[in-house]
Image (tube, rainbow, N blue to C red; front, side, top):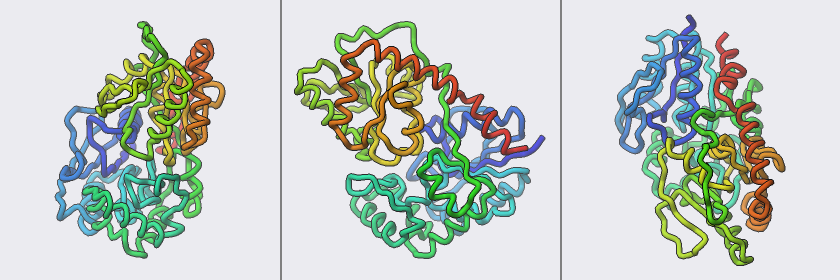
Length: 399
């Protein structure tokens, strides 16, 4: 049985986002056919990196680090030592932020498969990825390193994110030569997996073996429930971090204000603890992932108004799987997830007038909402089922 080593620098469980879910869903299935071992640094000072609080069907090796050892000197060597001991036939390297290129280059003899669920080293600003001064940034670090270093330093000084600051400093990403290290790591890969055309165009400049692979959704968990919501007025739902400007809540808020001032009846529901003065907005608090299917089923329309280049947009898939029409901004992977006019609508990112128009179309037409919701569920079952994704895209990589 072929052995596969999987390295992920951010993995922890329970998850905090789609990337961790994606890795677990993929390799729990791959492990049925191959000997899979997941290697994770265990370093929780700034983030629950490597913290496993619930069992998953993948063999995991936690490698202990602290803030003095989690750096470009010790991390590559200790990861390499653990992987070499396992002696895999294949190496798959997933999330890694700015230290990922060093590990890739240290393990180049394995001709690793690289996965970029987000943008890792293509935008060294990390949490502020491809989002600058309130608008989409189309500049890649590999093309304009000096511009991006300046942007990142300014962002870190202003926001003081401890994790991003630590990674930025320990990776020496502020030095001009770092971009060459990233480029070398891309060339050392056998295959690069990405989630949208935007990042593929960046990566394929350095390695032509780029493959766009969709993420998936658990269609058994996220599904239409028998109990139908008896909403007095239509519910418009946005899940996710509304405080993150890249997620586009302000655009949605302005769009809903336009509709409210036109006398439209609806309720905007957001997963936040923030209190709003406006009568059309209601917070329902942050939800555990297992509670999200019920929340989606309470909604009539789901919105993903991201301004930044959303890598894939798992939230849109979850809502679609629950049989809801989804309105998404025309950015990143969202453009491929929703079929405009069939399973939902696309709108121009940051354009509240366009978004308000699309929301109004669905508010005024219950039949259209139902028809699009059914099409959304059908699309997810056909294109985004985990078993089909693994069989079509991942298993052929390990033959």
